[in-house]
Image (cartoon, rainbow, N blue to C red; front, side, top):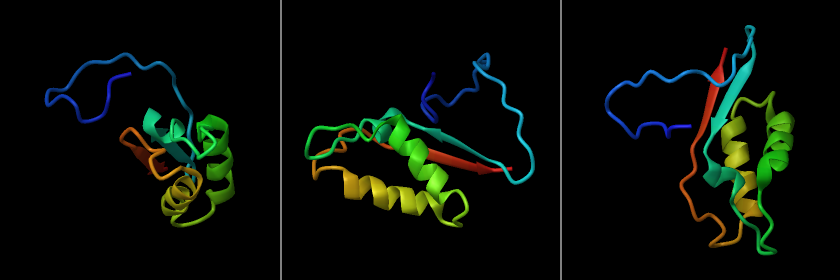
Amino acid sequence: GLALGILEQRLSIEPSAVLSVESGDRVYGYSDGLVEAKSNQNELFGKLRLQTALQKMMHQALALESLYDELHAFAAEDGIQDDITLLEIHV
């Protein structure tokens, strides 16, 4: 979809999915730069590693900081080639 913060004007965009959320749920949005970060072995961080990391951290108050630390421990020095955006919404 459209990148966050690119355009100043508000666009009317049809949702691609509808989520039911309850109090206490967390919803995450992320950019491709996060899952495309590479290790020294040229392995992608990937969606499964992201999902696993978030599940481990879901009860931590600072889950995003822990994920940031895990990503940088995984990625090679030049393994992050794209900008990274991660949005956490507490319901």
